[in-house]
Length: 259
Image (cartoon, rainbow, N blue to C red; front, side, top):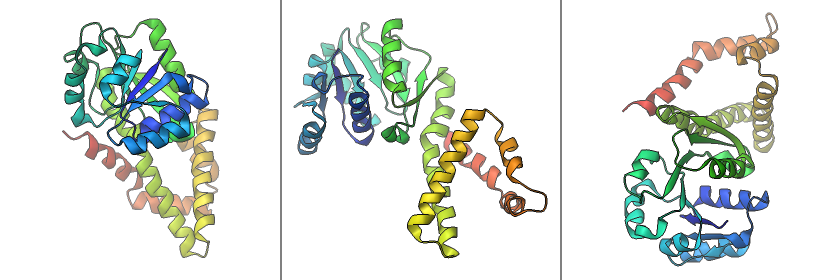
């Protein structure tokens, strides 16, 4: 089965590299188009996929199309593709383009799946939110989920929860990066070299997340296990509470979800 990418930015490149590295598809079975042909050619040479001169060439060559261009470009791309996508599987990682929005613009035989990824997919630790509403066959859906599961965690959400899911999983990495930077700054303030401060902070975040996932314990329970009576950690927790740490985290999501 040939996989075609329309758009080859950082996310699409990470997905292509991940699928190929995990053995989910052969490099020879991947074709891609991007407006920057020079960059596309370099990436194609590095990964072994076939660069295309147009989005239409990709649609003709591939069985499964992954739309990874900018959201504002999609209507124009779909118009240009026309009936070349009849009978094809169309996967989309473009924000705001859900199943129904696509189905209103593509041939009735085109089968659609909306997927929201996040940037940790680049290191095999992504979160991939699959919209529950889909027109893929059971076999196609199982195959696509298997591809993405090789690069992280796959979750299925009802259409009305894709927005909040995307806010948490898609925007969340930026907030975690800010937290890592802030704690590393504190380490530097008290004498740690920058590289060491960043490394230990990032590993601390990674380890804490893995501990929660492995044990399934509530984060509050894990937090309490570190807080000795009258100890250093509870003093830090108190300072974060006084600064509105948790309320500010919720406010960040509120800001995204406001219409």
